Image (cartoon, rainbow, N blue to C red; front, top):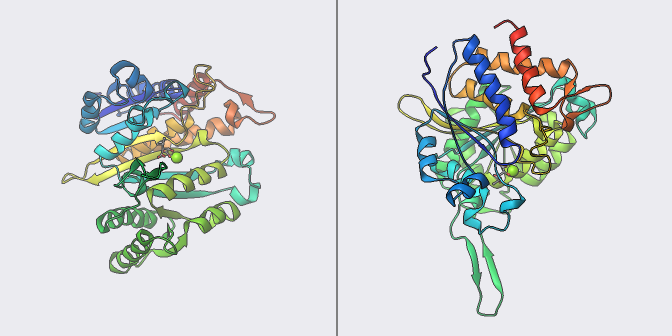
Amino acid sequence: MAANRKLLILAGDGIGPEVMGQVKQVINWMDGHSAVSFDVDEDLVGGCAYDKHGTPLADATMDKAMKADAVLLGAVGGPKWEKLPFASQPERGLLRLRKDMELFANLRPAIVFDALADASTLKRDLVAGLDILIIRELTGGVYFGEPRGITQLPNGERRGVNTQVYDTHEIVRIGRVAFELARKRDGRLCSVEKANVMESGVLWREEITKLHAAEYSDVKLSHMYADNCAMQLVRAPKQFDVIVTDNLFGDVLSDCAAMLTGSLGMLPSASLGAADATGRRKALYEPVHGSAPDIAGTNKANPLATILSYAMMLRYSFDLASEADLLEAAVRDVLDAGYRTADIMQDGKKLLTCTDMGAAVVEAMAKRGK
Ligand code: IPM
Ligand code: MG
């Protein structure tokens, strides 16, 4: 099958290369067994890029990312690079990708697989069947706002400054993504800010409310303060369908939602830019988990979040819904069969290595007869 889709793989640091190895098994299988094939290129991001190029993201890599139809990223960071100056740290590579590709919409689903409902630290009935989607604004707010920095004060103290800032168009475009996705799901959107304390939150609420009235009144919209949302997520998470929020609140709340599912090792994410004239969006897919340096190189990592990120890529970047369905069903099959990596291990289940879990997913896809 002729490759017609350009995919850039940036495996990164720590367990990144191990989990990405399993996605490559999946890609190879799909290449051999269905109409889906990719023109795959690989490059460095994070600490490994720093070691080779003295920067966590080389310009040539950035260039490739801009030209790719989709980027699949593993994880960045580790203790080896923690003492580097801020601008050289591995995370800056990831943040540059998000910013330069203008990936303003970050989709973080938190889904509880039936087989794993007992892995949550919350009671089974609170989380069984949970399926929520957090949409985090990813290129604005306090992550990128100016002024920022650490300055010396005349009195000998130092001052650290970051700026929370949102312009109308940034709120409207993320709001639009959220309303559209809510429409395709249960039709409920909860918009989250701190309008009781922050002007940027007041503006956020006003703009989302206006957009709702103008274009999306069929969606049921509610508003919530971020602290209450954190509390509601652990109290009664199933009350939510789609949540839309800013960059920093989204960072915190999505970790909170992730833990509801029992394992960070299960959660994929997609980061999307605006659609161009042809409808194509720049896109980056990555697991929510980090580089887990403590288990890197031991073949213990859970590759499912990265495999599920690849499934999101099939769905959102390439409109390959049936291939995405097949892959997601294969993941469900291996969990139902009792296969577990260490992070989701339970009594009586079969402990698999990272590579064996990758192989099990490929085998489950094959069994489903494609
Ligand atoms: C995330 C991470 C990143 C963030 C870090 C690694 C910069 O926590 O993707 O949620 O804060 O956005
Ligand atoms: Mg985070």
